[in-house]
Amino acid sequence: MARKSKRRKKSSGFIASIAVLVITFLARKILTKSYTKIMGQNPPKSGDIDQPLGKVLTWTALSTIAMAAVEGLVQKYLGKNKF
Image (cartoon, rainbow, N blue to C red; front, top):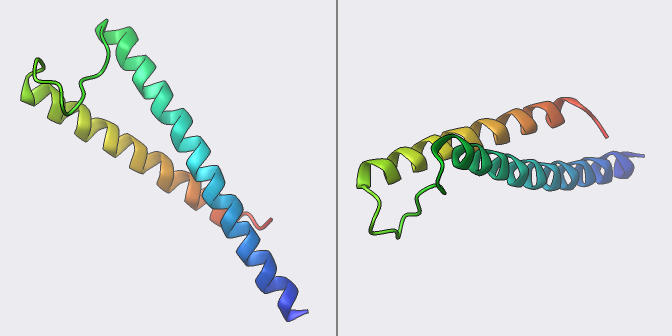
C-alpha cells in the first residue's frame, strides 16, 4: 500500500506541473492581448531597438511579476488538492 501512495504523489506532481505550464501559457497570452488592446501596439521585446529602454524594462517587470503570481497561485491551489 505504501507504494501506491508514493506513486500517487509522483503522478499528482506531474499533473500539477502540466497544469502550471498550461495556465501560465494562457495567462501570458491574455496579458499580451490585454497590452495590445490597451496600448494599441504589441508589447515591446527585449531586442527591439526602436522601443525606449524604460518601456521594455517596465513590460518585462510587470509580465514577470504577473506570471510568478499566477504560477504561485496555481501551485498553491493544486498543492492543497490531492488527485
